[in-house]
Length: 380
Image 1 (cartoon, helix red, strand yellow):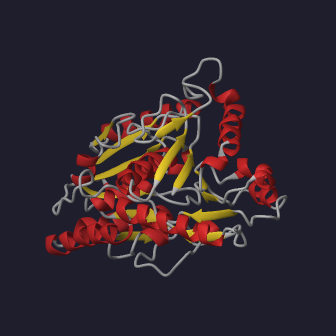
Image 2: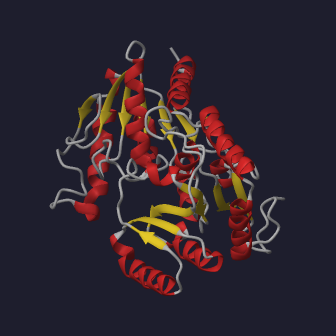
């Protein structure tokens, strides 16, 4: 089976990818090399990407690295890369698109002579997304893969073929630690919707030691500076908190392993939280607001605790009855107060949950099944 795997051209795809969708691309393509007897993958990406597959590109450098392109003009190069893949479609059995939610391919749907699998990476809640998808009625040759079932809710009538959870390498990288440590950990893009401000507030109220690992976004640098000022104030109040910037995800593993819990109070409807799975693979339970995919990824009371965002936003009947900041603080205190045998049982449950639902091997197998399924539906 010959597959054209179409990546974003914004950044080079490789083991040092930072963004969730690009990490997914690398992990999936890397996992597919073990299927070389049944899958032959050609990757459409920037020419300097590092992948175990033949690479087709329209520019050696990724848009973010090319001084003549940059983020201002990257969309036209993204379209050029997509156009190249479509022009070469006769060389493949199917195309697999992994850019955004598949928006870029919709105007080209009548030019497609091969089935296209689209992995949807973003939120579908924005009104412009729903309006844009409504412009295109013929999705017969497009097969959408949601990354959680909750992601589908705003657009339930697309031609979904399956929900496939992202996977992590739990055998070689994200290794289980049965005992954990004594600190609260948070990592993610340093943007307001990731909840860093709330994390610092919870650490201040609970007086638990914290380890914070933001990924800097230039447009939010001033906002992050204010966060750092708050961190200094916390230190003045004798709350132990450590912060380090742009730490590679592989370097985060030992921090996951040595943490008491991962605090993840999202302020948006995130379709999948890869860092949640990484933490649980290491045995670290998660405390999070019940937004987006959270109730689907965490087993309340078993692999962490889920908290309703407010009294006006009740998403479920969870163990913690308080809401908002108070609920998060109660959840943190609850996990810290667990007797050691019960806490270790929670860590083991986290690991087992990942091994059952979120491994690379499972993800690769599921995508291969999708490929086979859509090819059977293809008209002769």
